[in-house]
View 1 (cartoon, one colour):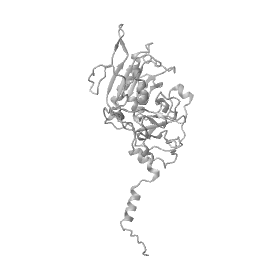
View 2 (tube, one colour):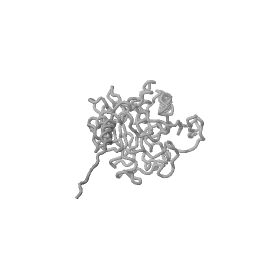
View 3 (cartoon, rainbow, N blue to C red):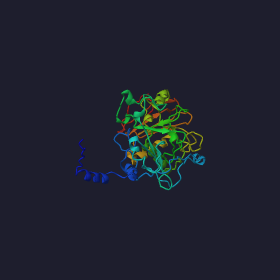
View 4 (cartoon, rainbow, N blue to C red):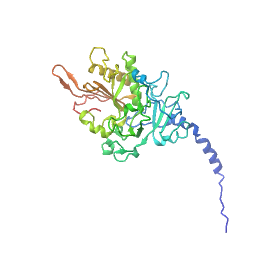
Length: 366
């Protein structure tokens, strides 16, 4: 019987040495991801996400903090002095895809079962990193027993790159729903309003939206309007829920389905309603327009956060409100504004990024 011979090429040894130098050590994987990693970036045309990814995210305890009752009264959830990411420095969450989690799982504090790494006071980072369920895990209209429905692209109705399918979904559970995603907002603020008894839930949410909302709050505060009580009236909507509320003003391809839009109002009294922001003794369109003024100033300073803003003067459970999104192109519209004694409704007038008027139509909100 002949002996089997193995030949060891002299080129193998140099190759192993070069590979050892080029591959990053596991302990530095998160720093490398933070500098060059991917965030949920779809739905903003021709604009990179606004988050500052130069600073590394530190791993720590995987437990989530809970909403303090005193925090809910004040409306400001973040202890002073904490520094987050984004242009505002007030974003405390990162949402990454499953393939990105490989670089995070080996770090201290990583909890693969809950897919989160949370910073602590000792690490100097209040940031929580969530891994998303990839869009490919969705089976028809469902994901893990939660009904999502179908996005426009799945139905062959792709209007532009901004309407592509989301990258993935953030899993929301009773244990993590109170996790702070920015200074003023919790993960639960953005959950779709349907399927209240179904767990886990799934959310599409993009960091630039959180960044823009925080900047609008900051701008209003700087202009003498107390905006600490900004509340989310409607955040993410599953396509199934969006279809169910079409008769209530939802657009067929609403930006709420892509995680980059929110309907907001400012509740200074804590009664769940829009407040009299301009102090004229009335709560009406003039108050919600002050939010638009802040959005205009924010977009002028940070064009990478440009998007749509719609003003709604409808009376309802929360009163007037504003829609804010970061779709990547400028859009403006108005709903439910009454003019004069005739109570004639002024229909929507949208404008493009060139401020050219678009023919008024009864199309639904974005």
